[in-house]
Image (cartoon, rainbow, N blue to C red):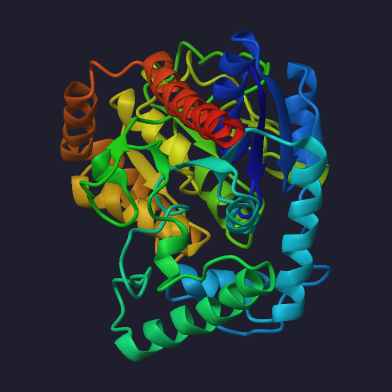
Amino acid sequence: MGRILFAWELGEHWGHLSRDLAVAQSLRAAGHTIHFVTRDSRIAFDVLTQAGFGFTQAPLPLQSSKLSITPTSYADILLINGYADRSILFGLVQGWLGILDVIRPIVVCIDHAPTALLAARIRGISVVLMGSGFEIPPDINPLPSIRPWESIDHARLRHADQTVLDTVNAVLSAHRCSTLNYLAELFAGHRTALTTFAELDHYGVRGDHEYVGAIATLPRVPVVEWAAEKRHRMFAYLRIGPEIEELLSALRTVDADIICAIPGLTRDLHQRYASPSLKLFPHAVQLESLLPGADFVISYGGAGMMASTLLAGVPLLIVPRSVEQYLGALRVETLGAGLVIRQQRKASDFMDAVEKLCTNEKYLIAAKAFAQRYAWFDGGKAVEKVVELIGAAIAGENRLSASRKN
């Protein structure tokens, strides 16, 4: 048995830890010691503490990058998060190295934590990559555009890759490690668990990794039940943002039973928009009893929420707030299993989309086709596959340690 570290550095909200939690619980049951390093300590407290796991705050830049760029590739995302400045990246890597040296894990499970991946490379620690697709860029040089709806100059992609590569290689050289030939090499050659389905991969279907399927385990959350008298039922899982009042204004006029979970919901919004038919909750709610009875789900585009909804055979109305969510939403729209709200985000636009989903059966048919295609899927088996990958990494590390001793 050994120590296993789960590292989460980039991204927001509950999706990363809800994915990691089920795997960590299985590993702990097998006798391993688990520790988390997390981007958001508030979410870590909500998710991990009640499950009995310890956690440490991940090293993050003291202030946001001054780069005012629209990210066109994963390299740009790294530039925005400190990889444009060698001194910042040196500091972040040093922070991760300090954590690795204290915890001394035998394997690091990387969940959107590129700097932890870099630090593990320096220390020679085995890693397993886990993510829904976007967090694990494909082995392509340069990294591909994450804005396929726009014409992105290939030279811009190469420049972003080279800028990050130079910074990363400076760090590797300073630690007397072999440098990378191209940026995607940082993510290549590792045991990888794509916790999604091929049709939902942000980068498109790739044949070099196994799709284990969606994994999500939330801590104990309240159970909410549908009203019996309404003809239509809608579930919404949203976040506070610029469009929230327009959306709530639209939903308030719909003749349906609507259950809406909005973590961070203010008392003012609740007082102004809640009604007997529009039930607003400032926290997550249990999905298992709600999804099968929903006519459709409204989501901001979290990968886990979209996959869970489609597995239940329910179409989606997606209101993305980031390029990652928009990419995922386009996959759902391509399947024909939902609609994406783009730039027009007035109450009338939401009403039009709701009307289409309520009256056009093609969205329901496409969602049910996805559910039928993956009727065999078992979330517990998906967890087992990830655990097996981590077990293989541990076995490989043990063999390496034995050879060193000999």
